[in-house]
Amino acid sequence: MATGADDRVICVIGAGYVGVVTAAGLAESGRRVHLVEVDARRRATVAAGRSPIHEPGLDELLAEVVADGRLTTAETMREGVAGAGIVIVAVGTPPTPGGEADLSQVRGAVDEAVRHAGPGTVIAIKSTVPPGTTRSLARSAGRADISFVMFPEFLREGAALHDMHHPSRVVVGGDDPQAVSRIAALFGAIDTSVVLCDSVSAELIKYGSNAFLATKISFINEMAQLCELTGADITKVADGMGLDPRIGRSFLSAGLGWGGSCFPKDVRALETSAGYHGQSFWLLKAAIEVNSQQRSRFVGKLRHGLGGSLEGRRVTVLGLAFKPFTDDLRQAPSLEVIRHLEDLGAEVTATDPVALSGAEAVLPRTRLVADPYEALAGADAAGLVTDWPEYRELDWARALASMRGRLVVDGRNWLDGEAIARQGGIYVCMGRAPVAEAPPATVVPSLPLG
Ligand code: UDX
Ligand code: UDX
Image 1 (cartoon, rainbow, N blue to C red):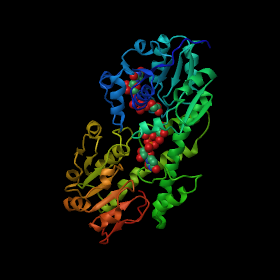
Image 2 (tube, helix red, strand yellow):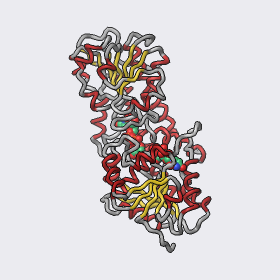
Image 3 (tube, protein in one colour):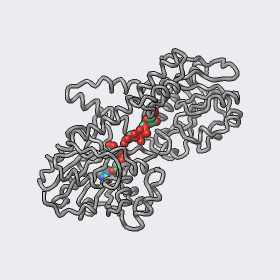
Image 4 (tube, helix red, strand yellow):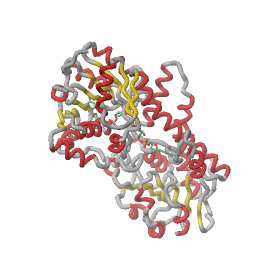
């Protein structure tokens, strides 16, 4: 395909976690980036050189690339696409109630981009979309002078800049080899593996990667249950398993399970998509079921630890974000846990280093406190939900002295149980025996569900 398109100019649509990080990274690599964002507040934040999300290092990078004009924001697609050889689509694909990916934002953004794109433009889909979507977008665009490729993102929230600079691989899938290599060239300077394939394979590499990691976590959480029933130590088990390079220790940390903007929606979307093609993806059904059980198991440990009832008990939840180093509350385990505790009659206080501001709207019954010590004062029990370093460094002698009770349930096996026990606490975690200096009167070691 002959092209006058200028790949030094790139349009990114959507200033969410993926869009704003991708835009900043491409600008950093010397391209001129137009970032199109419909949300005026987000757009204004980026235009001021600030990050609309909590992501380590992103504020500094944005300040630099906005100040020297490498990254500009645009409200309209006409402005954004003007002169761009490449258009990267990073709009949301939230789940529908049925579990499939809602593609309305993707279709809307692509329709508009196609209206303004010049001949030879490559439209690269970075949003996570079900198998076959990229081809169907190309068909409905009906422009032979524009190419579509699937260009999945693998960045982790909280480590996004690191993952952008050190991608484990770059995957580009499409039916037009020239368009595929133009997108792969965007990361030409980075030393990493490049997978060039058809768009459906690229779509499934993305879903498969997230679904496999989620299944790995659900596997270790099932092993954790068995450890409780047999008296083994899940951390030792995971260490021993993980030394096998075919298994690997990463994503073998047992606890409350997976949350966030990607795993929950992508695992369900993949399972649903398989259903459309007549396949029952049993492994994913099980991974989803195990994951939701983990929240109930955690609440069960608090209830049993407090004598079997949570009615009128004060429980302090440490951590709201779905994982540390982000302010993202989307599908955060904390939300399910807190609602469950409150439904069982507990008075819940919650704290988080960065995610409190977004919590008010979604946790109307919960007392939200910024200082962890203030949050723990007077509590009958503490429940750790997000593995922030701050909570591991807490002065537990001070915390326990201020609490009404001495039960600490660790949903991420993150805290130093022995140290807590030495301070008179009763430490209970996921997949290991409870730890207490003074024999716990009420805590029952392995707590079968229900
Ligand atoms: C997105 C996809 O949702 C996900 O499937 C993929 O894995 C990664 O990229 P994320 O960056 O977290 O995830 O999305 P989100 O935080 O929802 O941001 C999307 C942004 O696009 C929002 O700021 C939204 O306002 C913006 N948007 C949406 C547009 O600018 N134009 C549109 O037409 C639609
Ligand atoms: C994930 C993928 O890692 C990333 O490649 C993709 O682009 C987007 O989705 P992210 O959602 O940021 O990234 O979070 P991740 O670090 O993968 O953690 C996902 C969830 O699994 C979190 O809730 C985390 O607490 C949980 N988790 C992770 C475990 O419970 N145990 C583990 O061992 C690892």
